Length: 379
Ligand SMILES: Cc1ncc(COP(=O)(O)O)c(C=O)c1O
Image 1 (cartoon, helix red, strand yellow):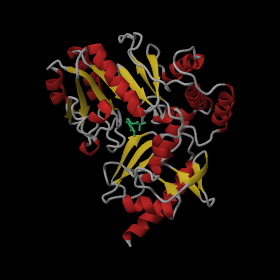
Image 2 (tube, rainbow, N blue to C red):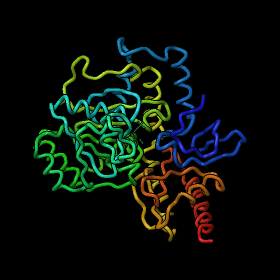
Image 3 (cartoon, helix red, strand yellow):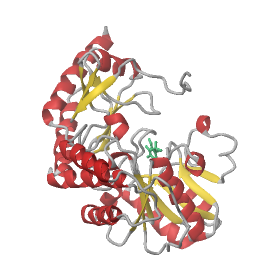
Image 4 (cartoon, rainbow, N blue to C red):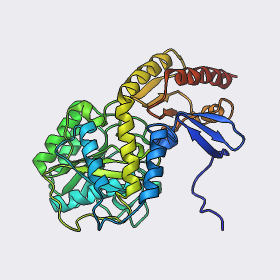
């Protein structure tokens, strides 16, 4: 049986990984500044993570959500401590799309409304409402297109006001820093206005922190820089350091009832253990401080490279914008310098999404390689 061919693949086969390094079957070492698309948060095969997951697996790996699982409450408690989102409640699922799907569904249940407002260049996942709220017609099937979604220019307050004033919007969903879309972020004033307009017109504000959350920006959540309080916060990627786990944080004004949301796999013992190991390591190794320190070092270094037109993003969710498409540059970095980086919808943007454990010495290796690769581009 062949595989359903939906991914254009690089011809590299990682068989082992450790912290910021990945190794292929020939033992070639790659510096991973992509983190499997912002997923690796505490480093590949972190010893605490491996130990806790191994122990958990030898005790109990899974049972459904029909029994007591104290690990879920332990995770909720630890999340409260690290994120300061004290009054919120936690619902666990398995991926980013699923987190957003549940967030939108919950907003619709709570408000009794059906329309979604999303922004141009957004990416929220590939399931029903999540993909309908994603600004990419190519991945929206006719069955998804039935959802009522209004796309607005990011930061356009007047249009947002006009749409919300019609009174049929259940949720405004936004990434605080757009990931796939190319690292754009609106102003604090804009996010505050979204909050006010949602309150005025009876809609909920969903912050999609699937990529930007769990410390990636140096704050636990990216929205915290803006002093806002979203109604629902979705999270996934860095949460499990590669173990599939996602979740939503839900404001106490939204009330739970039996059967409102549900999942077979969500919040299982291994998933909770993975997320707990991530949180404990973020705390123990002061990774939020490391993100800020390495990020400013990185930004300072890349500012000295004249070919870079724009540096976008925050923390370790960064984009380097050139005035040419980066596809060849990215290939050169992978195959000749053995460094993984990312791309985005913006063809000129090279994305940097390393593990939060990355060090200045790794930045130096990247900078030297980038300078050499850029020289080659000129030839
Ligand atoms: C901001 C954002 N939301 C949602 C998703 C979807 O997550 P998943 O692929 O885990 O379903 C992604 C994935 O890239 C993302 O970047």
